[in-house]
Image (cartoon, rainbow, N blue to C red):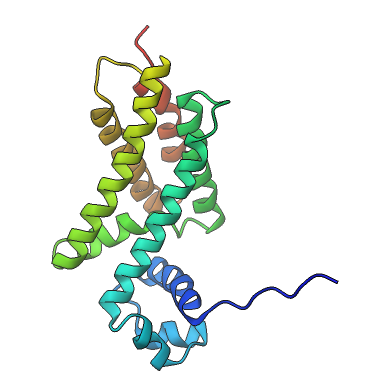
Length: 199
């Protein structure tokens, strides 16, 4: 007989529900009481682990970026693929998750950036750190591709990474409004021409 699944801790249940709720309603549209009701976690446990809604939002953002970088690392570590295929595979995985969510869950970092970065210094600082980490991971992927010879070397990896990250973020912003995959498909097809050696 299989062992029973281990029950999720209160903290884990809160983080998972926070990600769902912030995607669905944004930071300002989500109340602590709604998160508690949806997760079935007592209020005392919420404040024990996080102390405030802002601290909780920052923790959820950290969790999101951890998952994002893990997904990128999985593709980056597959040495059977070209750099273009690694990048395209990673973006396709993000796209499929977005479509499965009925065009609701795009990028939490992007959502928080548009909602919170202008008015909240703590969120702006954490988002800057998070996006810098994402940019750094993409730069490492592209730099490795330059060493292997399948990424252009007439532009530095850091500049290419800025372009790639902007394409990813912009594609999901447009797709959230358009609710179709055309922009996502166009961006996916653009990675090769952007990063591969000219000619």
